[in-house]
Image (tube, rainbow, N blue to C red; front, top):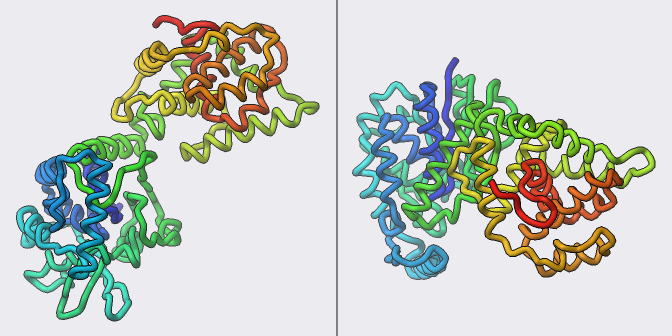
Length: 438
């Protein structure tokens, strides 16, 4: 089976693709074809040369001034660096029609060996756009004139109007993302049977039909925001490399999860640790009946919310709990670079809960307290984590009293808090008035 790695455009987000490549190398998955747009064309050259260590080193040392002729202060905090970079691009556009690509050219000369790309058994292709003729240009390496590979890579990467167009045979060319930011069709036309498409979800055109046509498609995208495209930062790059690696391994079934990486079967293990209690929680999700259609609708909305958010079905208790675990991880700000077992994840959430200041007037309240008023106040004044803890209190009270879950309709405006609360109760991290020590 002929495997193609398709690398989308996305500027500094391209570090993520190096992490995906790392996963493929670790699993010894061969790459026969690589096609790329913009930064995907640059990374594609590294793949064709089989220079992973060099690519890793490049991305872990990269800064904006090494890519663009902008004179950006790379010591600034990222928010200020983003603002300064945007200002520099704007000034450059009005003064000279865009930033110069000479720093990037020097970088490519250091890391791309054209002869090695041409000798490689990996078929390499890229996309650019002829600006004057308003037409796309797709080339495989044998169609690129000798000695001009770097010019074509620069053309594919010329993010106009931020960057000046690249001249090829006297014609101005710009970023290939204006035509095809994920060149799957190129790989299919080359005979690829298995497509590994790494999309950076950046501005640009992504053709959906080739994705549908692929006989075997592995579409790898990151749940998390990979950061601004035109600000290059070595710390962000290292983080994105790690995310790309974890997403690649998840895609091949090595880990569970979407936003976080869990050891296989972590949710099932969590359910098995407290089987009786988990049965009670499962009962909570079935407290509705034909006479309570609102509750049923809310629970279906929760499942749809999880399916859309984490891109997988959530129809059984195990998948629902996994979604609740991921939501809790997000809500409590857990690291997305860690591989979690059920126990490790529980400990990390417990540590976060211990740092919360829980308002005693709410958490010491009796059962008769006005639920709507309390939730309204908590939604207004308390942080999300505190609202999740309050919903955990209500879940516990529902399980203890065996009454219908009258608060369920209110979760439609606090879905993430409810899902986090569901995990908190499932993991036994709260007793209704105080966190449980782990």
